Length: 188
Picture 1 (spheres, rainbow, N blue to C red):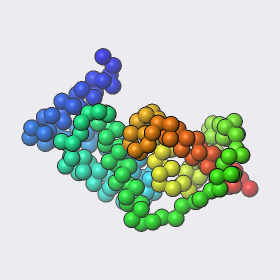
Picture 2 (cartoon, rainbow, N blue to C red; picture 1 turned 90 degrees about the horizontal axis):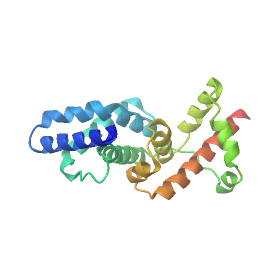
Picture 3 (cartoon, helix red, strand yellow; picture 1 turned 180 degrees about the vertical axis):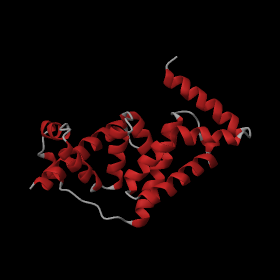
Picture 4 (tube, rainbow, N blue to C red; picture 1 turned 180 degrees about the horizontal axis):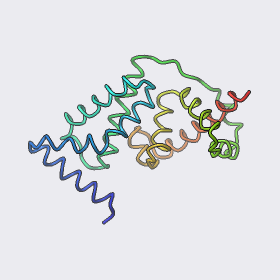
């Protein structure tokens, strides 16, 4: 049995025990997933204090709805879905301004151009990359965070964001092109 499968079986066992009244065991999930949930929320809303508060909200919601977890996906995927929806709702309430981009501009950019730019790991490029990511809207930042920082598969991302896997892939390619354009604009 793979380590990931053992972890998921262990988590299901812990959930069953929590639902039977051993609520102190919920701390396991806070320790296991707290930092990753915070990281996702913080990247979506771009505010440390709000991210801390929303992360607490995520774990409270997950605890309150633990009985609705059906194990059709991993617990972390279910939890990330709650985190994503909580953060997106917070962003929509604040109505942050985002950077919009013309579709025809993105269509004229080759995958090779994007790959060459985004694979540059120089310190200067990392600064430009982070600056470009900050200009993305909350959904786009979530997608980038889940794929590149949290290393979720496209299938997991699709489940978290409520998309089809092919739609998640298309959106990811589009966001990468958008980041490329933002980086190039900064260089001018």
